[in-house]
Length: 393
Image 1 (tube, one colour):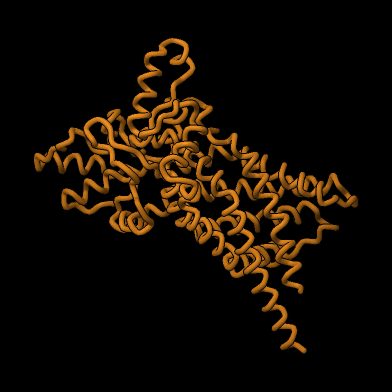
Image 2 (cartoon, rainbow, N blue to C red):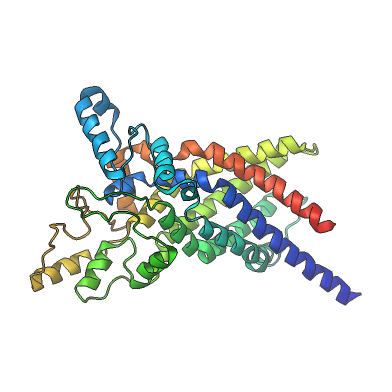
């Protein structure tokens, strides 16, 4: 009897793991086109700094100098080879991807999202869920919600925080690689041809080779390799901005759990209908995501830009050897604009966004969140029920 129970428990664990992974993979694929465009919009400022995109015309440009806007559109057409006007960043990126890569381009990098999602199931069942139970049962001694509601909420919130940290550490490298593939746009060279034409990384293999050399999104690392010096630590870039991701996970899970408990308290004994549950989940996830969107923007742009911690050392080495850049571009500098690409730390990244682009830049791409949240919530509601009904059969 005991063996039968253990076998049944193990079977349920495997089914739960598979259902979690499949659900996550399907919902990632469902939102992939929206997510590709959203990530491009969110990272637009960084693509401009890297010379991979053009600055948007500001309202004062449109009002004051139509000729300047016309020149900007001409540059855009010259770079992309597309004949339509530069009529807004979201529309432009969507049309650009469709015109240069086809509809398949909307799913660029989605294989990494699916891989991360499939890893979510085993991570959830084998690491996150047991850790959650351990924190509640052993650290907080399994508080009784009827006797101490506050301690019960604190215990589960703390467990969610610890679980979020573990999940972030395990799956963060896949997120970095997915971002690198998603925000890589196909362009034509302009000016002196200093900007790389086509994709920066034509495949995941090319991206991993760059990561292994320690030169991914890091001009300083690439220059160090050219000079025979040691570049950035290989694979260290896969954890760039990790602690920002951890803070975001902790804040997101805590906020979501807090709102969930508040809704449960207000609901009392009353049961929600499926439509009410869907609406509540949609509102909760959307509110938490929007609240933490500025932090996510800083993290992704910092992740994309690279770190210039060795820039001073490499500059000194170049001066000693009398090495000059044939293209006339200084270390970590955009050859078109002359602006330094890499950031010293995340605070410099946040400061740059605020000063150079304005507070609204922290929310760039947020207009797509309602659609994304709707698709995610619908997938999370329908797929587990579908899998559950077929599993029971």
